Length: 318
Image (tube, rainbow, N blue to C red):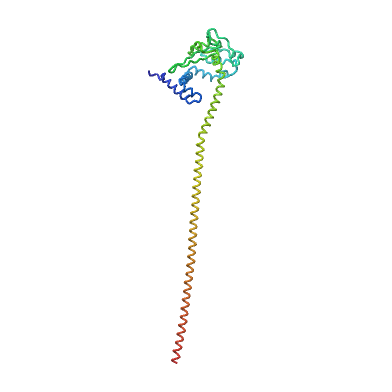
């Protein structure tokens, strides 16, 4: 049946959670093989995480956590014997009233486990449940199939009225924990969450930073061959252009030298021709002078002959 109230159906949400789990875990280095073996487990984990993040009580806790400075100081303190859960619970109670005591004496265990008193008579724990904790069974709606149940442990040092009042307002039903949960596992989950959250976050940040540095180095190393190839190609192109420029310059110099030599040779040929012409002119002029000398000699001889003939003619007549 198609949903008409603007919300997604169960199968649609299951497909959305499957897509989110596939995008997050399929290519993951650590969880990729496990996801390929059992993808439904990761889909259910995504579903539970989204349900927890969407809970209105989680939003109220988040606002209280960041808005109260005293709460931030108490929650982030790593001193043993401080009841962080009691201080936290006293701030988020719907109604007024004094909260429980924040200090319960020095620690009796080496794992920062506070020394708490016995629970009130209003609630009697089961045979497998430890006497100093209350286990809340919080089932989340399944997305297509059953989803593993989440357990929340609270310190039993809280007054019973405060605990039941807060549980009633939050809509969480108190049930006996399953028999498979042993006291050591429940205590480890309830106590070490606040004590190890900051070291885990710091180590997670360090791991993310190291992973980011490795990815950046891999990215740079992956582009390094292309950069070297591009640099070599650029240098080769520069060498080719330089060689072409030198060749063109040399050709220009050779052409200029050839033209200069041709002009010089033409000038020399012209000078030789002029010298030869001058010689020919001088020779012709000498020939003319020789002819003129012969003509003068002939004129002198003719004049002498004329005078001799005239004298002879005059002697005969006289």
